[in-house]
Every structure is written in structure tokens, then in C-alpha cells.
Image (tube, rainbow, N blue to C red; front, top):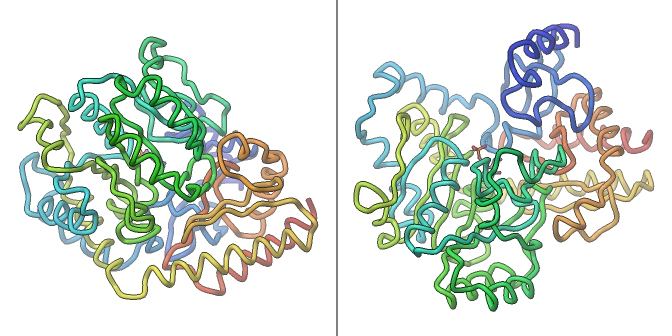
Length: 425
Ligand code: PMP
């Protein structure tokens, strides 16, 4: 860790906490984050030469693993023709078509440069299209760091116990109403009281930022029904789940059609991209067609779209999602069995290739039950796993991701490491 420690010291002099995104600083688990020098397939290697089996995958985008040849070569070829023009390109058309054909709810798509922009723009559009100001989100849901969405937010908000960020005007935060995830009765009651003022409900259809929490049976269907009945829009934030839990995301897997969808992560293949889209009629409100303004210098950037297109092409190979499901099942079994043998209370939630082991008794169905997890125990587990060469998210309230680059041997190594780590807790 010598070189990482030196780099962290240098980084802390010139960057807040030494990082460009807070959870990377390891404050949730303590210790020094290894600085990463390279990644290949399922593995990353730090600047001190230690190699890890990686279950973070850059927080979700790397469903093919690190530096897949097809993606790297496609990026290089595009780069030789220039990296950005600020003018339309054919690549953008192909990406929007690829998204629209996989997500029938997204007839028209706008590309942006991050998940934050996608969610921020989608809620502006929802407000513009409905003429209403209120927004409903769920406790522990994370939709990027736009002001309206940093209310009871998960991810780093959960890790650092700052779900309500300073700097967000109270008057704006007051327009964001929050409910417990999976609380159908709560949703119905809120809409009974204020349905006519609500522009949209935004939800991670499978929560990933309070740790993984699947939707209760009927929850997504109820959101669809209630929003429709009150003239509000339903926004699925599929920044994590899009192209991960099925090619067509949660909306395909659960058969619920939202009005607007946010994508990110996988559609950028490891480069910065986001997207939002919906029915033609709603999207007609976006500039230059309509009065909802949204723009971006690097939106639809050729390199990022190239990486995304190459990634989506690989995901259209047959058997890919079956393999992800199988690998997910094996990873879940390994962790569950290790905890049982060690007598450690652990609740594993998994949907496809996204999974979280909560250090508490189950079930974990919402943010309140997720918060019961023993974060000190998670921190001890995390550090032991790191020593044993397994790279997990440095926070209890995040997902572990399995990629197509993981082998059965990688999962076996992780299961044996977990058994050893849990035994010594
Ligand atoms: N929505 C969800 C569900 C996310 O998980 C994230 C990021 N983890 C975002 C939005 C924000 O995306 P970005 O970090 O690319 O801005």
C-alpha cells in the first residue's frame, strides 16, 4: 500500500478527501483506498502491484469486464477520426435506435453525459410536461446529485449519513416528497392527498443504492396504476438496471412500462454517457421542439457512444443474460453458505448479476430495514476481503456486480475468501 498511501497524501492536498467521488475515499470503511493502475477482464491491479477480483466494475458499467478488446479497439478507431465535434453524428442515431428497440417505452431518446444529468433532465421534463412541481422519490433511492434528488438519498448519502445535502435550498427540497420503497399503501395515501400536484414518481425499479432491494410483488404495477390515475408520470431510473438485469432492463424483466426512463453506466461502456427518453409526445417538450431546456457540449460524445454500442453488441450475443444469472446464483450461494457456516447473520438480496449481502437478519425490503445492517462488521469484512484479493464496494449500501468476464474460478476464489473472512469476524 506504500505507493497508494503516497498518492493519497498528494491527492488530499489538491482534491477534497483526495477523490473525485466521495465513496472512493473509504471513509465508510476506513483505511487507504488502493489507487488502481489497470484493469483486465475480471481483475484490477493497484499501483503497488496487488491484483484483485473486482466486483465493483466501476459501479456498474463494466458488464463485459475491464478493457474488453472489442470495446477498446472500437474506441481507438473512432478516436483517430476525432474525439468530439459538437455536431450530429451517425453514431448517436445508432445508439438512440439501439435503445429504442430494446426499450419500447423510449420511443425518443436524448443522450447526455451522466446518470445525474439523465435523472435531472427527466424530472425537469416531467415538471414541464405536467405543469406540476412536486416530485416523489423513495428513501435510500439515489438518482445522481441534482438538487431536487438529494433528499433522503442513498449511495454516498447513506454511507456518510448525509442523505439531505447542505446547499440544497429548503424551498426546493420541500418539493420532493419521500416514501419508503415498497410501501404501496403509502403511495396510495400520498396520491389521495396531493395527487393533483405531483409531476412524477422517480424510482429505481430494483433499488441499488441502499444495497440491492428488489421490488415487492405488485409494487411497480401499483406505481404504474396510481401515477396514471392521477396524471403524473412514472420515471424508471434504470441507470444501474438498464441492460443489466435484462437487455431491456427492469421494465422488460417485470413487464411494467414507465413514461420516462433514465439510463447510464452500461450504455457508455465505461465512458461517460447517460440517456433519458419516453413517448414521442412527452419528449416533444424537450428543446429544440419544446420549451424544456436541456443541452450539453459533449452530449452524445463519439468515443462514449462507440464504447456503448460495442458493449450493447456484445450483450446481444445469445445466452449472455442466462450466464449472468447463473454466475449471480453461484455468487449468492457462495456468500450465503459462508455466512451460515460462520454463524454470521447475513441477508443476501440479488437480482440477476447485482447483489448485496446485508450484515443483519432479513428480510431487507426498504431503507429502514437496510439501515439495520451492521456497518462496522461490513467494514471488517470488506478489509479482510481486500487483503484476500477481492475488491468490493467500500460501503454496505452498494451493489456488488458480476460481469461476463468473471469465471467460475473467480467466484470460487471469492467464496473461499468470504468463508475465511466471515470466520474471523
Ligand atoms: N441513478 C442511479 C440509479 C445511480 O445508481 C446513479 C449512480 N450510481 C445515478 C443515477 C447517477 O449517475 P452518475 O454517477 O453517472 O451521475
